[in-house]
Length: 388
Image 1: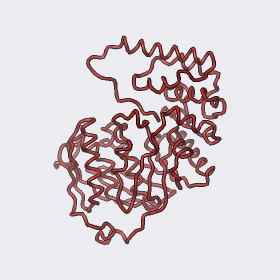
Image 2: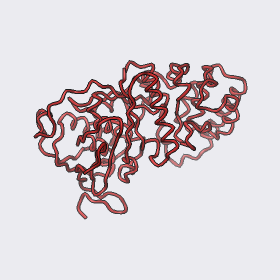
Image 3: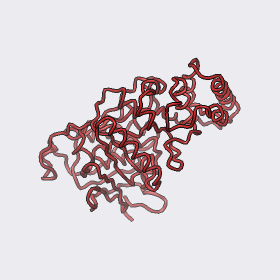
Image 4: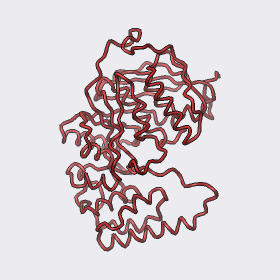
């Protein structure tokens, strides 16, 4: 094997060769060290862009201490931004802080790239990454982002092989888009199941993966908005942040924006809680149980449910269990991680039913006790979970 090759234990140090791969209509694909990675869509044209694939694999490459070899030139401004992101994320999570990229000399004006594309005008379309969660709905309904397209990627938080959940989530995305008179774009990909990409935590790579998707959709959208995770006052090392996302942009093709991150999660819930589309389609759960949009018993579901209850809207939300079940579900939750606590503490003082308040106070108390008694073994708690 060469320096960029892989074996059963993962990629070796050196360089990863990325080459365009043949694909059927509606699909773009690359070969990266003998593995085929692809994206496809029936809703919008995808076009191969070399910067897209390096964007997707930048952080895994840093983690592995390797680089890239391309047979196509890349944009100099994009390269500088990507290099800055690699340096920042390596400082957070370790890895090589340098983006090693061997590509033909970049051309001064991308539109003149040796016949690869005719001259282009940047699309006026505005895509919003949309999963149906609180941050997605907040950016859609309360922000000033004016999307023309909702972009949802099957294969990211919903497994392609999970037919029931895939059908339910795509139906919800299409229904929301139709309800607002805009377009839905569903993209399918095997990126997250690629064993090299998957070797790095999704919490570290998801922003770059969304940016890569936007690059491939540049014929349809000239701007991609990634909804916020953390509020600006609570930023932590994370794969999508206001100071990271815009650097993946490709001048003249795609501008990437981080959504309005000024509000806490509870503020975002309050802003969207009474909207009929939220009542019908809100999906915050990652459990993906039997095609349900929300399981109703995981920490994230319960956190969202009690926030909706505080604003007297939970009983209107068809995607969650009945409000009467909330106290029992809270009592069954063992304890909360330290990273989740600020979002739960935001609920103190808000109006809840007596049984809900008792169950919430008990959960907070046993979470405090659990942190006092849990052995730390000299290690900090895991990275703070997303507010989204």
